[in-house]
Amino acid sequence: MSLTSLEQEITLCRKCDRLVEFREKIAKEKRKSYMDWEYWGKGVPGYGKLNAKLMILGLAPAAHGGNRTGRVFTGDKSADFLFKCLHHVGLANQPNSDHRNDGLELNGYITPAVKCVPPGDKPTPEEKENCEPYLAREFELLRDLKMVLGLGKIGFDSCLKFVRKTHPLKIKDFKFGHGVRYQLPNGLILYGAFHPSPRNVNTGRLTFEMMVDFLERVKGEL
Image 1 (spheres, rainbow, N blue to C red):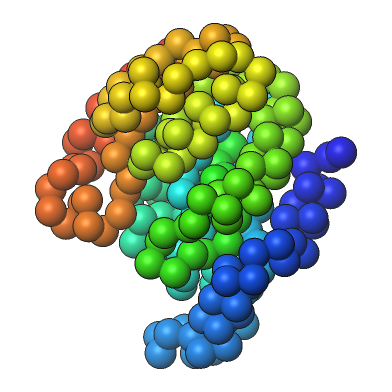
Image 2 (cartoon, rainbow, N blue to C red):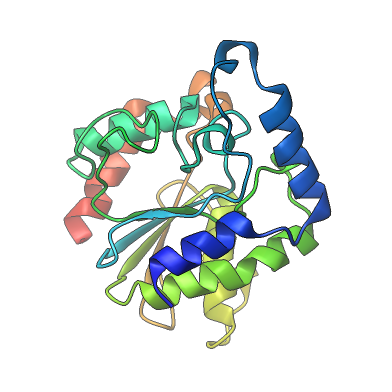
């Protein structure tokens, strides 16, 4: 399977009734400021380079971000913050991620653990499980992968669950936190970072300086 065919399969996926209903409801009702947009309203695949050494692994598409634009971390406040930081350290060619054809290039690969927007940003255990095969295939296709950056605990834990399928480990032994680093038994390096959500950024839990310093560490090890 190629990345292109995997992207098509994710886009057409209708495994989770609750998520399909929610993503399509948002796409139909829209937000006032995006009334002239034709919302994506489908599963949102990852994007980036097939020879990526770094995977950035988040939670799920945003209701009026990825679910609108069709690209994860695109067109929302989290994307604005994240790509400003990634561009600052040279991991992206521009500081903005606005839409699928905006010319953005990432030195790596970025994907959500859950491919559809969940109500309240809280996917059920079953919904997370339904998406695990897609993430597993992304890992298998990215053969040069050396490092995973888990944005938020769900992204972080999703990497551990993938590795656990072939290498015995206890997830509780890998404590999530901003800047933590672990060498995993399959050879991958797993970093954890706070999610660049407006809640974390606006409260000062995550600052531009914190994220830039952290990404400099990641880039240095790459």
